[in-house]
Amino acid sequence: MTVGVVVTGIVGGRWRAEVSPRGAIRPLDGSRGLNWFVAAEDRWHDPAADPTVRQEALGGTPVTVTRLRVPGGDVVQTIRSVPDGGGHTVVTFDNESQAAVAVVLDRRDLVAARLPAMGLPAGISIDGDPAVFPLAHGARLEVALAHGGDSRPIDLSSLPDRDRVAAGWQAQIAALGRVELPPGLDGHGLARAVSLARCQLLLDGPVHPGDDPAAFLVGLDQLVRLDEEVDPWLGEVADAVAHLLRAAGDDETLSWSAHAGLGAARSLLQSGDEVRALADLDRGVAGRSAADPPEVEALGDPSLVIALLEDRLARRTAEGVTILPHGFPEAWLGHPIEVHDLAVGPEARLSFAVRWHGERPAVLWEQRGSAPLSSGADPSWSTAEPSGETLWAAPFTGDLG
Image 1 (spheres, rainbow, N blue to C red):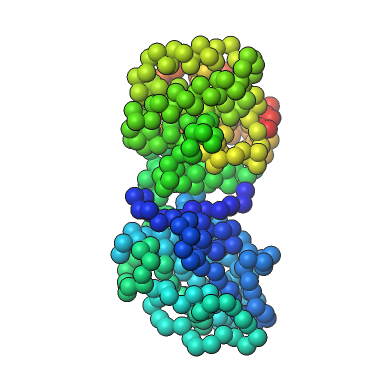
Image 2: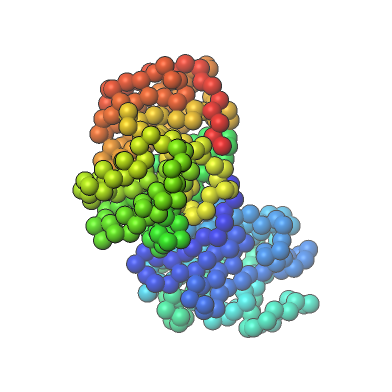
């Protein structure tokens, strides 16, 4: 799963910027951004067009790591935002190749630990007032964009590094649980995409309910789990629920996104003690089934990726909670799985782990807010115990869509 556009900024601050999949920074307020280039011994490298560029969101957080291949290794760009000095977005370049390069930025008005060199490499032309920084093998360059628009001096070496910033983001969303998935079916990428979507919700809140009511409900539910007050949002919740039910009409099968949104709405209404609205919702969905989950690429707002992963891991029904309701993807067979503190209701949390004894999965589970448990991978198994371990039958391969 590739990284799309990542939004960077600091929680509580107003400055935001998009980081492209190739490491360009585009402030959302329309102010000037930042592009980068590399002059290496072989040629001029423009990351916007270079096919060797790879990017990851570090640990599923808004800390991007972009690698550009040059002879003998990579030039690695890292982007992180920190609150220090009124807010800065720090851009680091590490030369992990075997030869010296020059990093060229398309503006000079940056906070930097050293002055740029004079002039551009021969044969290169860039609009504006570019800055050239020679970078020896193993050397590092660090510059920063001040969120306030000025370039007042700040000690860049005193700022938290990328690992600390990523760890800070992970700590903020830790209450939403943690998942360790196998690599098959891009499990690692899906888990990290969920982490990133949660961080983006912390930055900017849920999508407007009029744009995507299902994604709004899923996103708000995540924030309420992180102690956001639900009461100020209850009017929007009711409107989003009404929209989804009207759109469903008399169909006996709800679209997957509507099912996800209405499930989130149920948790929100329970959190707000909205007994009458909850009863209306239950009547509206009674007797309706949910469509199969879609491909990740078919989803719209990133919040729906969260719902997709949670639905693949456990689904709450009127009868209880089903673990792995769609069974095991074939690529996950034989690989360990760990799920910690997955929400299966406003106050209910489920943790489970899968290890393998030959073809059979050994499952350990623990839950708070006890509910009857069943398995989509082994329909013969069920339990009412709050914790325990068992050996499921050799599973079939579920179709995750």
